[in-house]
Every structure is written in structure tokens, then in C-alpha cells.
Image (cartoon, rainbow, N blue to C red; front, side):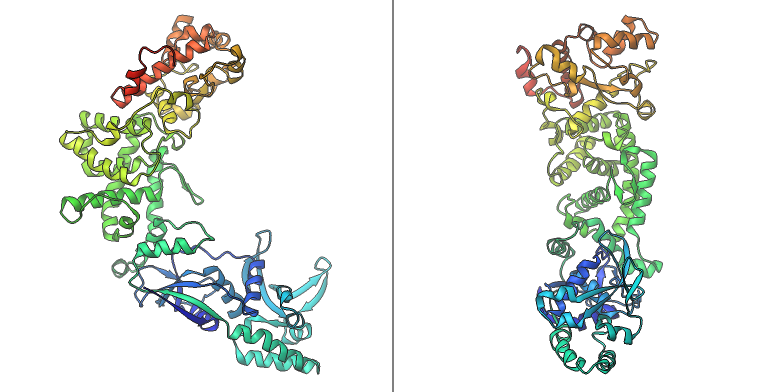
Length: 608
């Protein structure tokens, strides 16, 4: 349940200063610039609506690790907050630093450069038209000296109260300190008889607005579930990047009381993930890298989902759960003890996954057809362990993998497929019986080859890997078939066989035979690709000579790419395309372990 209260700004900022109000550790850092701070200060001085802030009551026992708002440096880590701020961090932090602390605000200028600023009100401008209030809020450099003429001339020296009074600039940092305000007022009124009336108007129009300013606050009850907290946060925090489960669990695990009592420290989930990811990526590049905020390849969320799949599968076997799942709720309900128990098991499973992918000739993160398909694959290995190492078991897993890739089964919503695949693949490998739906429902339409043109398609990457797996020999390094270990060394990539410009000129182009299709591409080294200039009939012999091979021997090398060399030597693009498309279809069907119904339907038809 949630309640709505109006809280005085002074009381709210006092709570920030004492640590009564803190941030859950999943909140990102404060980042408002100087202009936005001036604008929000002006809003408060005009008593204009600031917007609702949202908090979560912790009842002195927060489920999250908490941290003080930026600038509240006096708050000890030992202080337990009563409220956690879910929405309003930027506004309250800006106001706290500008109105409540005796140090400059660490912000940024319009170019994003870090600067220290003090905030003042120009009394003369403030008591004029409210429309000019933005101009009345003055941002002052950290040394409290306003300069002009490219900083050569001092306009106002605000390092003393007398200097502030002479300039008519009231320091907002003392606005809630009655004794300091009165002392400042007396110094100001002594300077000029007219200042008494000016101060009265300023106090009425500006200071009273700030002192009485109220902030509407929604308070979520301490009993609110973490799933609901996460959903609420994402809906109200429209100005930031969507919160992910990993960040929420980071704060939850860090707040785990049992772990702290046992170890005397916070659980550092990001550090655990970093070490695990670096270990995996050090052995298999397909898992990507983790540096400077980049988490490509396997992600932290993928890992958590795999853990949740194994946990819910085990609970179902023990009669403690009703189904296998890895929805957000399952992740948010993942106890730290269970995560610590299962994480090493999943890490070992992922090492097996890396080796499995290498056997499929997928060795780089950029060449991975579906990152998401690694989630159920790792979970299945973690559940079955060495049972997956038998020949029959790996054959089934391999078929399932390629059906998922070539049937493009992991392109949409995946959570439901994760669940089905884990249960069905485990049962298929362990007990035999029916194949998983990802196998039985997967189809490859022959016409799909025409539209596989970029790495955005999983099937495109899959065919590229299968060509290497089935024994393609490079056209420059012709000693042996390409191997995963040579992909980087040789600079292997997908290269165009018939140049696009040539295809466009060839009889005005060939309908339904696109030059950028995977049919007209093959994995070759950079050295080989450098020789692919002009039509194939002109470059094949030079490649053969460079390889010190007779023409017929080099034709055998071309054949390892499922290409009829005769069509290349005669520059017959249409015949080449039709013949190679059929070869690629057969390769795809073999990897999927079946013939598609469309293949049967199209057999015997003229052309493609």
C-alpha cells in the first residue's frame, strides 16, 4: 500500500543530512548540470510545484544496501535509513547541495566539464517580476569571485558577508539557518537605509516561499515486493536508463544481513560477475568482454537467468516448486545463498558451452547467432553434467542448437522458450522420447537464403559457421581446412564471391539472385579476399598460382565451399547461385537433422 504526504522541504533535506532518507544502491549517480540546478532553485523560490517524490519505507530493516545522497558526506555507513528514495534523486540532491551544505556544489558546465558552484539570489531581481526569477538565481565559481572581461576584472568578491551584502547577493546555503539569515540581514540593512524595505519584500516573496515549500511524497509500505519496487522505479524514473535486475540484486545482496554478520562485509555481486566473466572470456572469446561499462557477448542478466532456470528446475524435482522459470520475479526472489551455491556450477557449465560453440566453429562474440540461446544451453549442462558428454547426447544438443539458429527460434520473446527447452531437452537427452519443440517446430524456408544479407540474421551467422565446420579450405592458406583457432590469425570473415558491381552489370542483374545474399558469400581470409577483384574467371588462376597449385587441385579447394568451380570459371552467376543455394539448403537440413516440408514441396520445380 502507498500513502501520499506533503513534507516540508527543510524536513526532507534534514533527513538527507542525517541519513534518515537514503538511496537504494541500485540508483545511479546524481548528474544534474549547473543550468538545471539554477532552474530548480528558481522553482522553489517561486513556490511552484516541484513534482512528486517517491520513497519506500524500510522500517529500519531495508532489503537493499543503502547509500547517502551525493553531498551528504557526514552520513555514516552504520546509519540505517527509514526511507529509501525511489524517485526524485536528481531534484533532492540538487536542492540539498545548493540549499543545505556548506561546500560548493560539484556539478558540470554546459560542456560537461566538472565545476564547483555556489548559488545566490540577486535580491533586486528577485523582488521584481516572477518571470525574471531564473535570472535572479546566480551561479558563482568555487572561489566566490565573479569576474568579467575574460576573468581579468573582478565584478564581485563574495568571500565575505560584507562583499555579499554589497553585491546584493544572498547566499542560498544559509536559507534554512535562522541565526545566519538574521546576521546576514543585519549586515545588509546597515549598508543602506533603503535595504530595510527591500529586505522585507525579499523575505516575503522569496525566503518565505523556500521555508514553507512543501514536497508531495508517495510512501510505499515496507511490505512492497521487490518486483513491485523494480516496476514502480522503472515507471517513474522516466529520465534515466531502465533499471535491470542485476542492479537491483546488487543492492539486495549487498544488504543481506546474514552475509554481513558472517563476513563483516557487503556482498559484491558486480565484482563476482566481473571475475567470472573475465575467466570465461579469457578462455573463450565468444563470451565477449567486460570493460569500461561494456558487457558484450554473455551478459550478467543472461547468467542470472541461467541460475534461475537451474534453481527452479531443482526445486520442481524436490517438490518445492511448480515449474521451471526465469522471469523477473524468479530472479528477484533468488536468495543469495542459492546464488552462491549455483554460480560456480553455472560457471563450469559455461566453460563447456564455450567448448561446444568452438566445436560448432563459433569463436567470436560477433559471430554468435543468438546470445540468448546460451542461457538454456548452460542450464541444461549444469543440470545434466557429464551426461551431455556422450556421443548420442551431444548429437541431440547439436541438433537442438542448429534448429534454434537456422529456424530462427530465438528472435522474439525467449523466456517461455527457455523454460520449454530446458525441461524438454533434459528429458530428451536423459530419457529419450519426443524431441523438444525447438527441434520439431523449426523450419528453414529455401527462399530465406535470398534475404540473408547481413550479420543481423542468426541464420546468416549460422551458415557462415557451418561452412567452416563442414571443411571449407581457405583460398590463400590451402594447406588444410579452416579451423576455429585460425579464424583470427587469418582474418577470416564473410567475403563476396562475385563482386556486387559485376553482378549489377551481368545481363542487367539477375532477378531474385541478390549479390549480397549469403549464397554469394563464403568465409575467406583477408589475404584471399584481397585477390577477389573482377569476375571469378579472372582471379581464380592467380589464386591457384599464388598457392602453387594446379588448376584441378585448386578446383577441389573451391569445392570445399560447396561451390561448383565450373560456374565461377565461366562467370555464370545465375547457374552458380542456383547450384550453391541447393548445396546450402542441404547443409542446413543436415545440421537441423531433417528435411523441411518446403524442401519436399519445391523439389522438382524449375529454378528457385
